[in-house]
Image 1 (cartoon, rainbow, N blue to C red):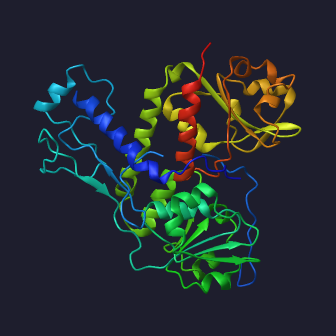
Image 2 (image 1 turned 60 degrees about the horizontal axis):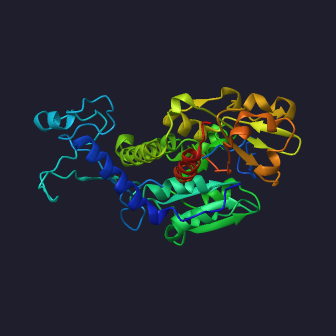
Image 3 (image 1 turned 180 degrees about the horizontal axis):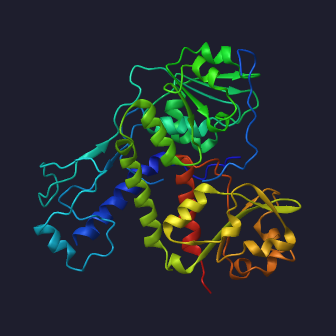
Length: 391
């Protein structure tokens, strides 16, 4: 289940990341053909607002990339006089950064301004179809983020409609896409799309026989897209399109780093001294899983993960052992609908350090680890982590 939207993401993106990048720069300068319906994975979909400059109407993204004549804005080991040193000796550009130097001076001080990093065009003149039986939206969102509007979306009847915040972010692109609802997915229906490229859900990868993949166009045209890791998904899409993944990832990496730095600048504690946990509260038990996106974001911010809360697979834990999941900061997904106040009164969980210090926060089902869900998670973490009370 996706969380309901608290606020639109798209209209904030330009402002947030543009400001974030400006501040960072200022700091650094001073089967067969029969009916076929693979089973969905029972594993909990793991979760999940920065801003790069939003590009054209297709949703393609640009971002300000540090130029070769500027020091690395993420270098926290530089001496206090690094700005003056940078004026005399340019910092090296990392190997995977595209050459974006420019001589055009547009600032008030006539200093060179980095040229924008633009996404390369993907799948020009090709028909792309997205097919899934439960939740196709993370994969659709990945395509939208790189400026690709699929010709059609095929999903089964009863599958999840696009959540509100997805529509708020990608409404213009959705209006351009045809959507087919099917009682059951089958090979004939997929073939009838005459798509040049097929994007299928990752959980089908081991279920569809190799001969069926060949029938659908072969591995060069069929992609089982990862929806648990936005980097992996963008890398896969770039590979299918035959472009350098580094070119596609570059603006997203800048945006992600800017969001992390914005959170770190807002908190008043050292993440290295704080443990982090998350789990799902149900009627009779609590559940842990890999929570890929939450684990990645918390670790990237520097928090210590309570490993017991990040199991490889969905694992149930009895209420008697719920204190094993305690930490300085805890995010709980309430599957019962009773609210965090009532959960905090549970005779065992009420003894937790997180409850006693008031550092338990609500976790939504962010849906996946795709880009938009990752941004939704960071949006919430920015609020929660600035409320953290170490006492």
